Amino acid sequence: MAAPSRADRRVGRARAVAMWLFVVAAFVWAMVVVGGATRLTGSGLSITEWKPLSGALPPLSNHAWADLFAKYRATSQYRLINQGISLAEFQRLFWWEWAHRLLGRLVGIVFAVPLVTFLAFRQIPRRLVGRGFLLLALGGLQGLAGWWMVKSGLEGRASVAPERLAVHLGLALILLAALVWTALDAWAGDPVTPGPTTASGAGWRRAASAAFAAGVFVQCLLGALVAGNGGGRVDTDWPLMAGRIVPDDYWQGGLWTTFAHGRSAGQFDHRLFAYALLAAGIGLLISRLRARDVPRDVVSLTAACVGLLLLQAVLGAATLLAGDPLALALGHQANAALLLGVAVGLAWRSSRPCGIILPRHQRC
Image (cartoon, rainbow, N blue to C red; front, side, top):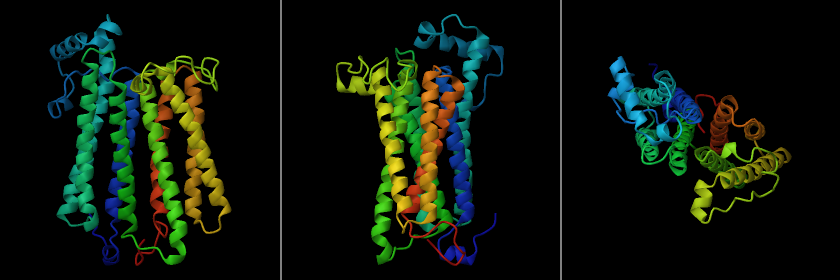
């Protein structure tokens, strides 16, 4: 493991640490995608127990498979949706959920082992040590939230509770965002105070970019509520919903019931917020193209966000019109997580007075 140079240490830069964090962020992104496949294939309730250590091994005998299948047959999902499926069909469900959990364990190892190593060799900048432990705790909380979500589907339901799915996805996305931000901090070095000539413009860029990233995060949570309620399989026309601007069955008799459990309501909210977010992104890009004091990399990152937003809108509409097929739905979810990562990068860059690629003797 190459030690940071004196110049890097002087400015609080640790690029090996940054690369490690970017790799972990890529693992978390993959876990979000595999989690989406688990949900779309209805596999999330195929493993009815949470065994953090021994659960890493799949069934190794016919007796073990029979035992797992018997436990699944006791669930509401089996009785209401999958009654009569064969052991081979159950195994297809099992492998998706097992892969999702295994990937979660791998994320923990890929993060924890290098963290201990970097700490032992004192290669993590002091300002980031506490953040490293917070990221580790957040990863553990994500695992607990996953089991809390699964339990909701084992207690009289045929699927997990939509609000718990939103919490589970939300924590994964917060972890992804925190990893990207911390990796950029490690790569660029200690922050510096902007000069008086740039403070006002930088302040506006920082606020607008942070608000945009927060909007992307909120839109992802709204998407989780749509997914949790199966909202992508109703009102499959666009731009109207069942021929109307506002669906007839939007109101479900109460605010929480409508917002968290309404199938048409969730899809309508998701659509409406998508339009607002796209308009905001395009407006932000136009304003930065017109301004003379906006750094080129800020403009480029803003343009990348708008490009990903447009792709996300196309994927969303195509997924809906095609009846929520696996490939398109996974593409929609994968692009959403990628969009959030780029939006976080934009927010980070907007908070700094200089770019990320600097000579070794400089800091940002």
